[in-house]
Image (cartoon, rainbow, N blue to C red; front, side):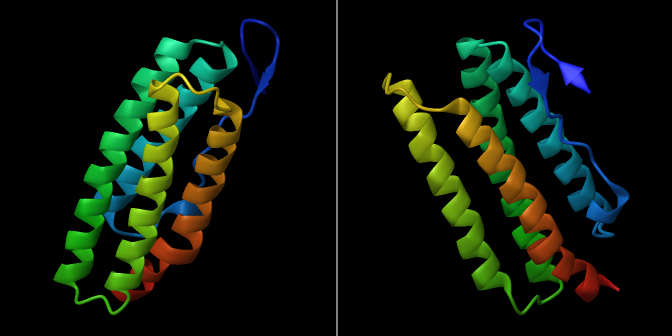
Length: 138
């Protein structure tokens, strides 16, 4: 277990082998996203508003980069579910951008709620959507 400096329990997102989809570049990018979410959690639990904002911006930029790379890969293998997958990606980006915009405008937002959402979304997306790429890959 990991605790912040104030003794609050932090629930670090741990990468598990079953999250690997078997496409090295995509798996590496997923690992990086997990690292960024864990960094976001650290700043959230330490009530570091500047750190949260900085990491959130980095996470948004990296996620957009990852989605473009993943969609290009899907195009390269003629993945049938590309358009549906692209819409799922756009939906996440839109939701997180709305959150970031509110935060930047000084609206009181719940960083813990966003953190939980991001963790659940990423793992669910990898296991239920991206894993379909693994089946196409093999």
